[in-house]
Each structure stands twice: as structure tokens, then as C-alpha cells.
Amino acid sequence: MTGSDVRNLMLAAREQHLLVPAFNIAYPMIEAVVGALVQTDAFGLIEVARPDLEHFEAKSLGAVADEFRRCADEHHCALHLDHVPVVDEVGRRVDWAAMIQEGLDCGYHSVMLDGSRLPLEENLAATRQVVEMAVPYGAPVEAELGSVLGHEPGPLPPYEQLFASGLGFTSVAEATRFVRKTGVDWLSVAVGNVHGALVGAAAQQPKVQARLALDRVRELAQATEVPLVLHGGSGIPAEYLRAAAREGVVKLNVATELRRAYQQAGEITGSVAAAQEAVAQAVREMVTDKLGIAGSATRLRTS
Ligand code: 13P
Image 1 (spheres, rainbow, N blue to C red):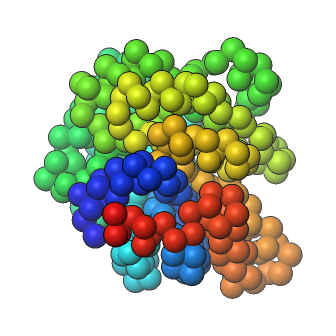
Image 2: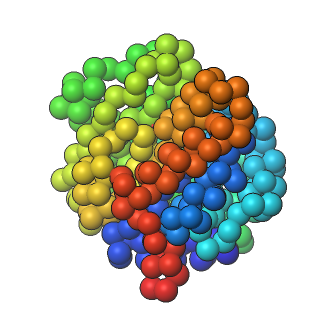
């Protein structure tokens, strides 16, 4: 599997309105996720982001890539570098170019630069630079426009207020220009989706059930013509996810649901194997019942 194969698979998924879930690997759980994808014959991405390294047990980009190569099945998964921020969730500047380069050198099939906390022109320039860095590797690049809130410390604004006001939603006009000028492959959009909290009291409470502004999804998909990405996939009701897939969302990022499945089973049983089995069960249920993509790996390969 090459980066260019992944780019083509995502385009095929968009044609067939199939979601491609991207699971964050916060703990030793790659083998469990891959096993569940193989069992259900679904195609998904294994992804890792800075919070998985800083707050949880993902260790390093190299360690995740090694583990992926040890147990991955190339018909069912590829490896993605999630959220390399220019400015992170607590306002620190990040050496994003070094981290993107590390990911590409470690063999990640695709990478994401998150310049969404920058003014538009700076986001555009940094994203353009990453698209150029990725060319020799053939790796697709994801960028973000708009504000998918939830990772920042402190409480979110009340969800209904956020949704009704469209706070931080991706603008169609900006997205159209951004995609044209950067040449980015996939665009992460803010359309009512929020990230699950990473730390603090909110991380212990149930995640808000987000809704999606489906009209905005449709407009963004039609205007940009690239596969759209939804971050904050945990807890969004199935009917919204399936409708979003019909409108042009392809990649669905999921972290909180798997992290909590692992943590809760681990706390109850004290067993890593039981925690991993809880993760596998969560992936099987999501793929089969919620997203309805069992069999997508064969459908995408033969399309
Ligand atoms: P959730 O933790 O809300 O599933 O969001 C995951 C995500 O978007 C990772 O990039």
C-alpha cells in the first residue's frame, strides 16, 4: 500500500458513500483494531496524534509505525499522522515541519497539518508547504479549516449555543479558495462536530452528542470537490454520520470511544488483554452497526 493507493481509496470511498473510520491509537491497541477491521472486512486508518503521545501511551511516531508494520493487513488499513498542529490546544508553537518530516520518513501513508488556530493566510501558507513536503513520498495531505473545539482546556460553550450560532463553522468561500490554493487532498471541516475532552473533569464525563449541519457539509463537498474529514467522531448519532457520508464526508476520526473502552475495561479487570478486547468489540460494533461499512475493504479494492 502506498500513499497514492490511499488517495485513490478515499476517492473511491467518496464515490460509494462509504465512510473510512480513522482510529486514534492512544494505548497498545493497533493489533486489536486491525483484527476487528479484518474480521468485518472493513477498511480503516490507524492514526496517532500528539495528545496520544503526550497524555496516553502511544510512545512515539516510530514505535507506532513499527507496531503497524508488525501487525497491519494492507487490504484493511493504512497509517495516518493525525493533527500536527502549528499552534497546539494550549497555545504552544509546535515544530510542525520536523514532526511532519518524521512521519513521512517513518512511512506514514498520509499526514495532517492543523493550522486551524492560525489566521487564514498563515494556515494556507503552512499547508501549502506540507503539500510540497509530501510530494516526494506520494502522501496525501489533510488540513483543517474552521474550529473543531473540545481539545482546549476549560469548558466548551454550551453545545446548543455553539450549534445554533455556527461558532467556528467552516466557511464555504474560504474552503473553496483554501483547497484551490493549497492543493490539499482532504479537508477537515467544522460543521457542529466537537472533539472529546483529553484531560480534566470533562474527560471523565460523557461526551456531548454532537449534531451535524448537513446543508453545510453538502455545500462544502460540492464547492471543494475533495473528500471531507469529520473530527470528533465519537458520540455522533449514526443517522448524522450516514447522512454526512452521502453528502461527501469520507474520513471519520474516532478517539474518545476507543480510549474509554480501553480505560474502562482496564480499570475493571486490570488486564491489558481485556482492555484490548473491549477496543476490538467497540470497533466491530461501530463498523457493523453504526457506520454500516462491513465489507468495505473488498468493495473498495474491487471498485
Ligand atoms: P473524538 O475523540 O471526539 O472521537 O475525536 C477524535 C479526533 O477527531 C481525533 O483527531
